[in-house]
Amino acid sequence: MNTGGLILVVGSLAAATAAFIWVAMRLGKGGSSRGKDGLPDVQLDKAATVDVEHIFNDEFREELRNRGRLHFEKVIGENAMFLQQDLRQTTAQLNDYMKAEITKTLQEEFKKYEQSITDAKQLALESIEKTITTIEQQRVFLQKQLQAQYEDQKNQAIARFEKEMAGIINHYVLRAIGNEIDLTDQLDYILAELEANKKAIIEDLKSGI
Amino acid sequence: MESKQALILPTSLVSQVDVARIMRELTTLSDFFISTKARPAGSDVQPPRLSRSLDQLAQANKVNLLEDAQRRQLYDELNEVLGRAPLIHMSFASEASPKALDRIIDWLRSNIHPQTLLQVGLQPTIAAGCVVRTSSRVFDLSLRSHLRGQEPYLIELIALSVAKQSK
View 1: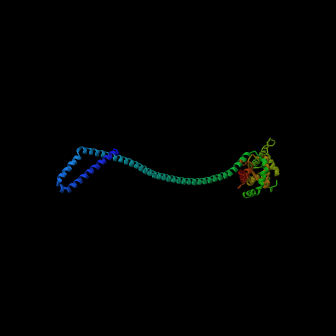
View 2 (view 1 turned 30 degrees about the vertical axis):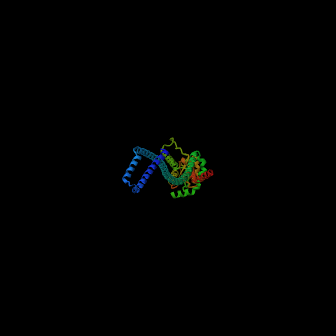
View 3 (view 1 turned 90 degrees about the horizontal axis):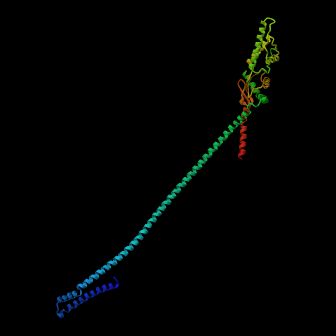
């Protein structure tokens, strides 16, 4: 329905209204002049009814119904269109709102998640740092312990070496010499040793005799 | 033979075994003379051979072995020596030669006691020197003992060497 049709419908409605007003005014004038003419009101009513029937006949009414139906359809269509537009707009807004809300919620959740991850990371880092500190302490302790054990074993080995080495060298010298030295060659040494122990030997023999 | 003088033991008489052997020889000799008296005159007799030790002993103490009394006295004195003479045990790393033993017994009888008897043993582990054992003491005069006594010095030398190498 275009603008012309709308003007036509509005014009028809305005004409009908004007006709009603005119008829009413005529009827009012007739009432006041009843005294002059002497016509009863019944006649006026009849005349008005006839005129109304003459004006608003079936065709005109059908035309009006059609026009009203068309207008109603037009209004309904327009409203449907508006409603559709509103619906689309609302849907779009709703979508935007939903998107915004979801985005906001998601961002909040992501922030929370990120915060949780950060906290967990921080906790993990703290835990790792504590573990590293503990391991470092353990390492230092073990290192000290190992060092002490090493020193202890080293000292023991050195002491054992010193003790055993002298014995080994003595044993080696004794074995190497074996019976190679003739007793005649040792006589001077033997007699010197006897001379050194002479007093003790004499005393022991005197006490034994 | 002078009776109051102590019996002089030759260096060939070293141990109690030697003294006992000499005493057996003296007994054999006495037995021979007894049997000679019992034999008829003019019969062949084979006198027992005397050992060099007995000869030296008789010469050193001026004993006439043909005299029965002197032989008996010598026997008694030897018996006394066997019972009373100081006994020293000496162990060597190797077998002692007679010459070496002579020097040692000579030193012992000159410095310790004139009638010292020596019992010789063998102890190869001492390497050199000797181990002297008297009635109640042991004198370790061996190289082994000497080396053991020097162990602290050896350890000191080793420690010094190690210290030098560590530097």
